[in-house]
Length: 341
Image (tube, rainbow, N blue to C red; front, side, top):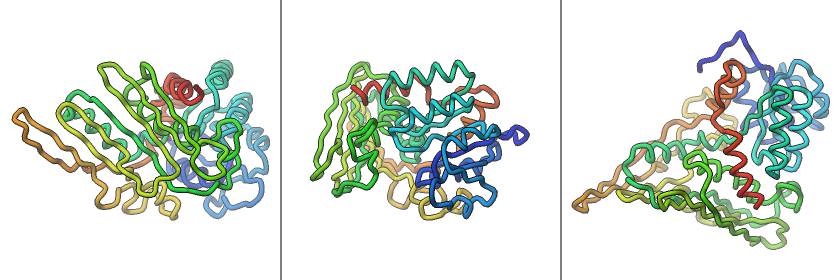
């Protein structure tokens, strides 16, 4: 990484649950441009076992009052993102906010104005742009081998037929339900490729017994030149199908959801361990093209190694060298307009 270790950024996490432990702390610790200084742990003090020099605060306010912390990771429950982002900006901190950024575009715009008024930056944690499977999709699209794209399907499925224990996801509070949980991942991937759609159609469903929130959604997005994109997610898929299906005039590309980083990090794997970010065998994408004579050719597309470290490098470069962060405000507003509609 192109980092300047003389300009280290002190960072703090607002929670040390799964997201803090898996998606943030390992990367802030691994990147030489950051110093993971503090974490909020309201009850169990576990972070010290992983990071012996860490400061563990009892509350969000305590961490925000630490004048040495420059970047705050807002990884609290969805319905608290707006509140905690606003509080961090008021303390003149840069913020990295998990998805969904906020529940509404109005909240997002208010935070943008506040960030500008205090001269601090907002970064959006859309890590799925750096998944190994999605980078394969980008590689195929950029190769031009599909010809003019006609249709693209993205799926993110799970099987959980019971109501989960996380109240902020399962109760009808602000930013709850599957659309706010997995919708930001899928929509951000689409928007990163094609921008804001011309129009869209959305369907929500409630299929689990006793559910109070949506546990199914599908959204059709229309783009210029008759390009149609469909994003779908369900909590009741026993046999997940391909996560990415693309059809163009000259070919098709099929790819399973195969990024392994979350699974590896949950199992305790380190970023420096051999095999980190490498997809399991048999998960390669299949590109099938056809020539003018109607002859088909199949090509196995190997994925690059997955890593979320470039996301943190982009944050570092934006803060220290004023480089543009890949996920823009316009991207997030386009996403939220669809979700909250």
